[in-house]
Structure formats: structure tokens, C-alpha cells
Image 1 (cartoon, rainbow, N blue to C red):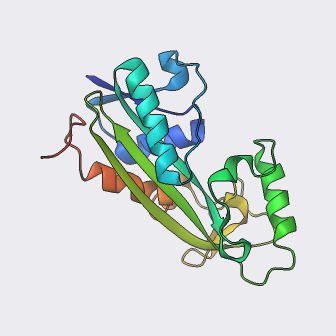
Image 2 (image 1 turned 30 degrees about the vertical axis):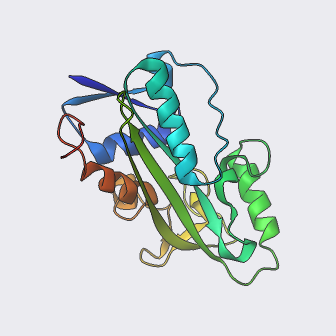
Amino acid sequence: MKTVVIATNNKNKVKEFKSILNNPNIEFKTLKEIGFTEDIIEDGKTFKENALIKAKTVSKKLNCIAISDDSGLECRGLNWEPGIYSARYAGTHDDEDNNQLLLKNLKNVSDRYARYVCAICVYYPNDEYLLEQDYCEGKIIDDRRGTNGFGYDPYFYVEEFGQTLAEVPLEKKNTISHRQKALRKIKDKINEDFSIIR
């Protein structure tokens, strides 16, 4: 069985990765499980650049196949903020702090259109890599709704569902989520053994 390292320790992301990729031939390991404790400097200017930095760093250090994502929220009425700074928008890496700052900044903004963005990178020890990006569209509402999900999900309302992403179960969220869409693009380009389809 081949091991693929998921370049995160975020349990919610890992759950989504495993649920969507669902590959019995692959053992997915987190950074913690593989013993990787180094800080990865994400100094890219786009989601794709940061996803590539993370996957490449882990692959090179561990000589393994690594998969990473960089994702976040973009609000049109805030000039597409918080963008790549979504996880540290309020400076604390705390979901609720980020949400409260977002709502404060949107207080007098009429355009509530928002989209989640996810870039996924699979990096191989021979320096080949796959890089995909996709979106989930919705709007930001003022009232917190739901207890599932994470990040901005309780305030991210999806017209298609008539609910926030925090109100729907993971299986339903995976049908439209930005991470699901990007991961499925990746899945379409890899074989059962996680090698690139030629």
C-alpha cells in the first residue's frame, strides 16, 4: 500500500480529503502522523502558489507523494477579502474571531456575494505535480446557522440548499464544496495507485 501525506493537521480537512478521494490502495497520513513538525512558509500571492509551496515542501523533505490545499473565502463587496488570509483574517487563527471581523467589515456592504476557493496540489518526488482550483458560490448572512463544518461555514449561505454549509451534513456539502470540486479534478487525473494518468 502506498502512503500519501496530506500536508495539514486540520482534522476537518483530512476528513473531507479521505471522504472524497476514498482510495483503498492509499494510506493517507497527516503531518502529525508522519512526524513532520517544521513550519512551512506560505508566502505565495495566490491560493495555487501556496498549495504548491506546501505540497512541494513536504514531498521534498519526506521523499514522498504529498497533497495539499490552500483555501479561503473571497467576498466581492470587500474587494475579494479575506482571500489567502482567510485563516488568519483576525490575526488569531480563531474561526469565531475571523467570522466576527468579517461581519463587522460587511456591516454597511450591500453586496454579500461570496465564494469559497480551493487550490489542490499533488506533488511527486520526481518534481512532477498536479494543480487544480475550483469554487463554491454563496453569500454571507448575519445570523450564525448550523453546527457542522468549520471556518466561515455557519455564515455561508447556499441558495441551492436554502441553508448554510454548517447546516448540511458532510456528504451533502461534498456535492458542491470547493474542496470537493478541486479534489475531483485531481482524482480524474490520477490512477488507483496515485500515479499520474498518462
